[in-house]
Length: 334
Image (tube, rainbow, N blue to C red; front, top):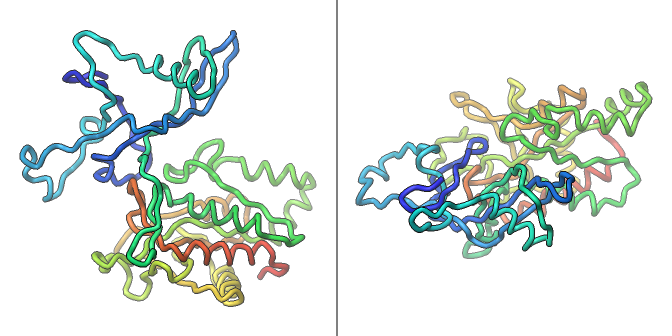
């Protein structure tokens, strides 16, 4: 789209994002492009890496009520600016993608057929705070748990059978071929255990840790938490509990996770949403209901969840890796 001499891209918001932090950031673009080359359909990942776009704020002089509550219209206010165009010049986005395929991968595409791309903040993750207490970065929810799970699996030297599952589309309901509400995990386990009797017995003897970030108690908004269940950053992983099954935790699975934390000298906390607020959910209940597997929902405390840049405790990652390593190596389940 071209407006007022600027080349912009129309965008769609993924999930429940905090929109305001996306303004005035140096944005790049990455994702998958599908194209035709030598008569065949191919797909390739691309990443511009450089800051190629920005969503400029409207000056306070033109929006005097901006600090009094500003309802952002995603259709009109979020299209990023990529460049200025002169006169009747027409920008060609598919040509831009064709050039990027050649530049990044040496591929000469005959035609770009389609694409699925996302803007992202080019600012790198960092350890911040006077004493280095915090980890700031994009998509900590839930790449932080995925990273911890992978590190723990790599650290495990146990002969116990263990599986790490990182599903997609959790923020939009998980209903996809690679989401938790799809058949991917069940099909994989069935292929590992083709005997229906072995499958059922294994599921009944197994336990799932659903790891997804938790809401840390924010010093400026402490009233948003239950007084007795406000998780603190750098005070260990959080066990999430909800009697309406928004989390799949029960007393047995929570007790086992506490047992692991005690054995590894890892601090552990609890989170229960205020009774007068709606509770979010995770893939824990979805996976538990699909497979019939016992589950505990846990996560690391986080600030600014779903912002372009989130904040977690820099010490909590080691806590989570340590307890997940113990879980992978555990010979006994409740």
